[in-house]
Structure formats: C-alpha cells, structure tokens
Image: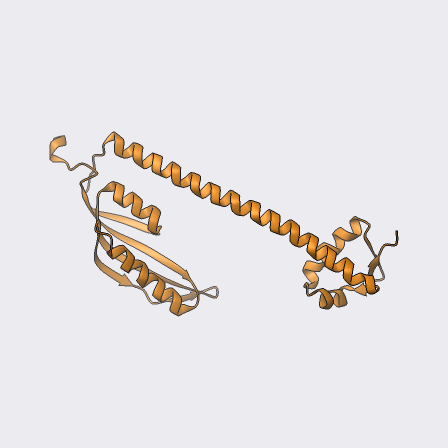
Length: 197
C-alpha cells in the first residue's frame, strides 16, 4: 500500500471500545460519578461517544465498583493518547483502522508529553512522601508527649494508658517501646512509669 493512501496519525479517526471503572462509596456517588464522567467526555468535540453501556454497581471489599464500556470515535492518535492520560481507562480496544502511519513529530510529542506527565506524577508522589514523613514524625512526637504527660499522674498499665490517651493498645505498644528504649519511661510488672532523673 502506498504511503499517500494511508491516513496520517493526526487525521485518522480511530474507532475503539474503551472501559472506564470507578471505585468508591457510597453506591449512589459511584453511580453518579461514572455518569458525570461520560457526560464530560461527550462534551469534547474530538471525542464521539457512539454508545455507553453502564454496568450495575457491585460491592467489593466495602467499596462499590461500576464500569462503563464506551464505543467511541477519537479524532487522531494524539487525542487518543491525551484521552488515556486524562481519563485513565482500564482498557482500550482499537477496532478501526488496522494500520497507522505516524509522523516523527507525533511520536516525539507523545514521548515528551509522557515524560512531562511522569515528571508531574513523580513530583506529586515526592511531595506526598515528604508530607507523610513530616506528619508521621510529628504525630509520633505528639503521641509520645501525650504518654509522658499522662504518666505524670502516676504509673499505668497499657489498658489504662490506652483509655487515657485514646490510642489503641496495639499502636501504643510501639510508642511505649520507643520511650523505654530512650530511657524516658520504665516498665515494671506491666505498669509503665516515668524514669526519675
């Protein structure tokens, strides 16, 4: 087949079946969210939704899952790639055309867009990691201070400390162990008390 007879990737109309899933709760919110998602897709002039087949919501691990299968026409490979980034479908099946010819610039633009989005996601993950580390460190200090403050009135066993601090016994064990290691409290016969200095 001669190259002139093939459509260029930027102009090719792509027919595809796309599945998008939503998971959350409550059930009504999940059902509304997927319908709103499809309405947003329909407003894009470069995305033509031929048919939308919605599943019934199903409960999975205390969350509700629903999906929609869209029969769509997308105007060009760049738009299909952008759609994937924006809507994060769980699967795409291209039904037409069978072949594509892409310009070098299309492939370069795709790779550069992919890199930019990956860098953006990486920055978000790093920011979240730093925030989590900061919160964990400060929460640990606050919990330790609460334990120390609680023990100023006298020794307590773990059950009573749990009631006083509001920290579950299992989590409390971690903080207590650390405070014992730091020689700030001591444990004798199951009772924790401050170390006198």
